[in-house]
Image (cartoon, rainbow, N blue to C red):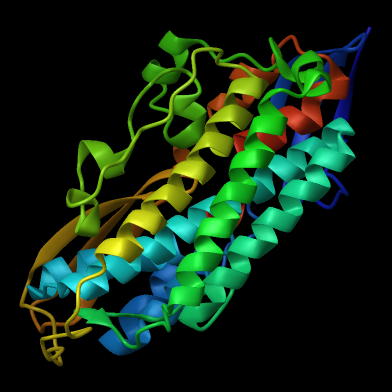
Length: 358
C-alpha cells in the first residue's frame, strides 16, 4: 500500500519554502514531485529599470547562500558588454571573496546535512568553522550580501593585513582537522555510503553541475575548464569522488572547502598592488550589444546573459543558476531510498530556490 507524504512549504528540515511530494510504498520512496514558485521576486525584470551602478546590490541580494557568485557573474557579463577590464588587484580580491563564500557555503551545508543525520557533534564543529569563514568575509563590508563589486573593478579594498593572513592560515588548519575527522567518521559512513546514488551516465545525460556532478566523477569545474579572473594565475585542484552517493557529495564539499582556503592563501600571498578600478563607467551600454559570462558558484556553474537595446540601455539580463540544472538529481537520488534518509539526501543536493526562482 502506498501513500503520499508532502514536505513543505515550511518545515524544520527546509531552509527555503518548497514542497516535496513523496509517494511512499512501505518505507521506500517510489516517486517524488517538487512544487516551486514560493521565492519569485522578479529581479531580472527589475534590473533594466536601474542605472548600471545600481544593478549589483539587487543581484547580491538574490540569496544569502551564493550572494557574491550572482553579483560576480553579472558584473563579469556587464563588463564584457561595456568593454571594461578589472585591474589585477580587483580580480584577486574577487577571487578571495568568492572562495571564502564557497568555503562558508560548503561547511554550512555539510553541518546542516549532519544535523539531519543526527551527527550533532561533528555538525557543531563545522558550524563553528563556517562562522569563522563568515567573519573573514566581513572585511569586505558584509558577512553576507556582499556588494563591494563595481563595474570595472571594486569600490573599496578590504584591509588584508598580516593578521588577516594569519587568521586564514589558522582557519585553514582547523578546517583541515575537521575534514579529516569527518571523513573518518564511522557513524557518517554507515548512514551515507550507498545512499542516494546518482549514476555516472545519468549525471552526464542530465547535465548536472557543481559538487553534485563532481561526486559522480565528472570534472566540470568552470574555474578549471574555462578559467576567469585571477584563476588563470593560480593552481586549482578539482575535487572529484567515485562513490556517487551521499557520502561522496559531503566529501566533495569538505575537500573543496579546504581547497578554497588554499586558493585564498595563494591569492593573498600573490596579491598585486595597484588601483581597484582603472576605467570610468560609461553612462550607457553599447548600442544593440550582447555578452555572456560563467562563474563557478558554490553550487556549480552559473551563467549570465546580458543584452542592450538600440538606445544603449540594458534590455535583458538572464541568469541560469545551478539549481535549475540539478533538479533532475532529486528523483534520481531519492527513488528506492528509505524515507528516513530523504531529508539528508535532499540537503546533500544543496538546492537554492531563491536563486532558481529569483
